[in-house]
Image 1 (cartoon, rainbow, N blue to C red):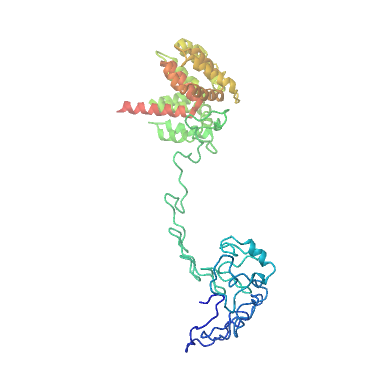
Image 2: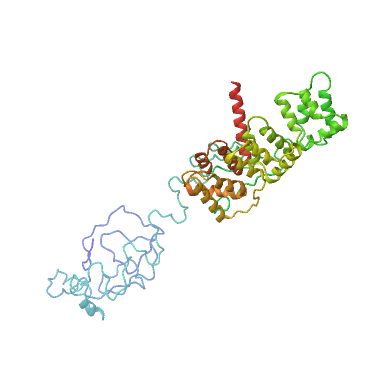
Length: 503
């Protein structure tokens, strides 16, 4: 290694068998280091001469044949005062005084004396602090800078020019499709069903507690009442046809009574023919058979059926030949007639019928039995239970669909004060509200009542009342909430009781 200011002497002798000159290499560069004795011979074909290189440095090494040519536009000549300059004051000489290339003096450039004086005391005498740029000169190149006139070399692990980017680890191979990820569907195959997914070709089964197709959605337990924010809308009740038997197309009462006559004529009775006929006709198609039978045969159909049938089958057949109002009137009469009273029958009919239906029952009852339903009730019931039945028998319940929220809250407070919030029970308050208010209004009252005292209205009635009054009040509340649900409960209890008797 050579040092600036030292001449090259005694280098390595020429080595035989070295590398021959390489064609296409770097051309000789002017202004570079002079040839050194005993070093490698100049190599032909190097880099061509580059413009903008370092200019010749005065006082430096003499021009060496075959070296790099001078580069215009590089750093200006380094002034004296650097390597080989006279030592600063107080500093000993390092023995470079007699060298042919003693360096540059501070006077080589006009600005150097001032610059050097500024740098005194900044580390080395006359020199800058290590790692600091020289004052008055542009910033030198950083380590491993790009060569002037040549493009920036590639960074480590950067793609090579003229070559495509190499694949990253686990990257898809060029020319091959991307392999499937774990648990991914295989190409060319359909996606397999997920766990508990619907099978292809089959309809999706209903979720648990989902509404059944073709049936209206029933209200959920303790569902929010209408008129309150966030509450679910009230499910409209179908007030039209509720039966499972629809009108038989082309039914003719005169032809139907012929079937009934043939089934009862002669020895024995063809019960199956009666079932097939009455079971396929709607109520409005069955009722005209009574008049048609008398028109065709001059006899009473009801009396002929009673003479041919018996037991529960007789009751069912006769009931099917009456209108709903006629049947209710006869049932009320049977519930009151004789010893004892069927309070359950009275409660079921009067608590579940509309105003119009109750008025029709009163009209038929008066025509058939020469007295009003109210008079019949008074003679066989008493106390608050009698008051409840008489109130229901008026058929005067409010039937408006709108709800007054403030009145509903007031009624809920009244019920609470009349029952749970006092010693004893004021049954008249319950009677006045439950028998006069509209059904939408009472549903709102029940919801507000539960918010107020934290207990369902049915539970409060069970705690505050007993006997027939309790059963009557509960029937009214259940029919207000869900009339079909009330009848479903009645049917269940009736069949459960019958099965218990048969055991």
